[in-house]
Length: 233
Image (tube, rainbow, N blue to C red; front, side, top):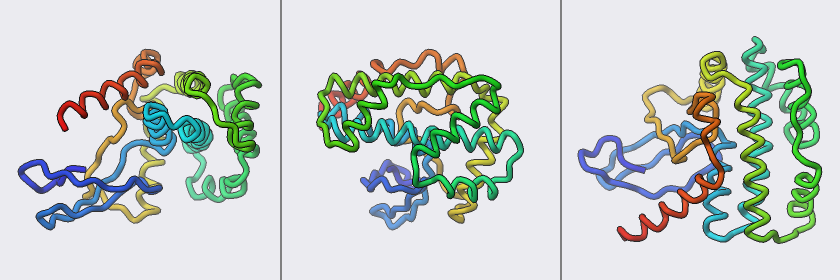
């Protein structure tokens, strides 16, 4: 992170935590409060790409899987808020299913059906079976297997996102953001920052830009960035 008050760039390395914001103090004693602009599923997807780039296949796989589950939550809440559901009522209801992934998946399918009046596309059965094999049985996947899995998750996320028009749903997205800040007692004097080079979320792209995203290009760009960074160190 870079200090917001220093005239020259003064960077400080900090741990990424579960919250959407972080605090740190630079060498000059300036206190910084930074809000991350990505949703959790975007951050988890980026962590998966970085782990895959570094050769940690199982860690990459679990992050891809977790990203998809948090994506389900994001879409369910987006649909609910867009249709006028009070955010407090949504949070109360979500707690009833927050610890069981099967309930969350069922809620996603139902919310999608009621909102778009059509059955949602589902992931191939072998993808789900492979996920259970890795997560629950301790299988260590190869780089190729994780790359294929990540590519399928990426295609699925983009397929769903393309159903949403950015301008139509932006009011709901802003309400979701405001709810999170209010819950954490975060004021608007905090700085904003994107930590993901190319986020996969709706907030950052139009439908046309979403269609142009490509998984292999994203992974390639992470590898090229590491090479470029190493040349300056």
